Image (cartoon, rainbow, N blue to C red; front, side, top):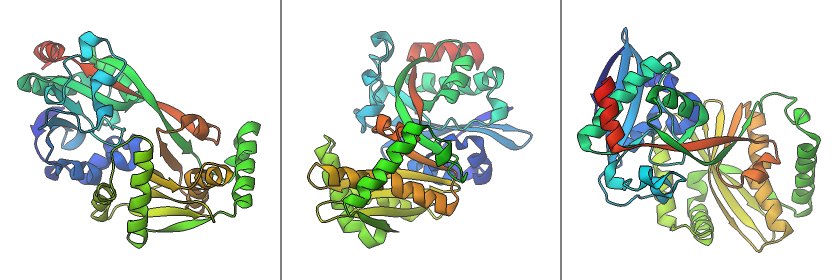
Length: 350
C-alpha cells in the first residue's frame, strides 16, 4: 500500500471513497466531507492509501484555525479521560480525525486495510502529521468497530472514553420488523398510536423550501429552550448546505394539533433515513408528548417502510425512549493520542 497526503478531496475518486466506510451513512459520504472542506474554520489534510491503483484509505485530519472549540462536545477535556491525557487538548493543539461536527465520525479506511499491520501504517502517517504540527490526535465519536481497529493498530497509545449511544433502527424493510420486537416494545408502539389518535395529531412531510421560515423559528426556539445557543438564521445556514447536495433528499416531517406544532428535518441517502434536527412548540402534557412521538418515531417509521428503506438513524438524544421503540443503542467513543505519543509512534512506525 502506498500512502501520501493531499489537501483536497477533489483528486479522490468519489465512488471509491464512499465504499471505504459506509458505517455512518450520509454524514461520512464524499459530498458531505467535501462540504466540510469548505469550512474556513478548519484546515484539512487527507491521509490517502492506495493499493494497485485502488483507494484503500482517505482519512481527513482537521486542524482548527481557532483557539476555542466551536462545539464543546468535541473538546476532549470534557470527556471522561485521565487529565494527563486530555489536559492539553485545546482546539489549537488537536488534529481532529474523521469529523468536527454532527457527533459521528467515519474512519474512511477500507476493510482490507483495517488489519493491524496495514492500519498501523496509516495511523503512523496521521501521527507524523500531528508531530509535524505539534498537535494531539483526537478521535471524536467513533463506533466501537473503528475504535477496536484503531486500538489494535495503536499499540495502546490511544486512550478512549465513552461519549454516549447513537440510536439506530435496522431492517425496517422487512415486513415482519414490528412482529419481531419484544412484547414490551410492541406495547409501547401501540400505546403511542393511541395517544397520537386521541390528540388529533395531523402530519406529513414537505420540502425545506416550503416551510423554511416556520421550521427555522421552531428549531431555534427548541434548541435555546434546551440550553443551546441558536438562532433562526443559524438554522437556515445549517440547512442551506444541503441545497447543493443532489445525492441526498432533504425534507421536513411536520406535526400539528390544536395546541402543538412541530418539525423534524430528515435526509434520505441510499437506503437510510437520517433524522437531523427537531423543533416542537406547545405546553407540556399528553398532546405535546403525542406530537413528539409521532414526529420522532412513527412518521419516520411509516415513511421508511413505505419507501423500502433499511435503516433509520435517530441521533444521540433520548436513547432510553428510542430503545423502548425498537432502536438499537450503538455506543460512540472519543479517543486521544497525546502529542508526545504521536511523535514516538511516528518515529517507530513511519
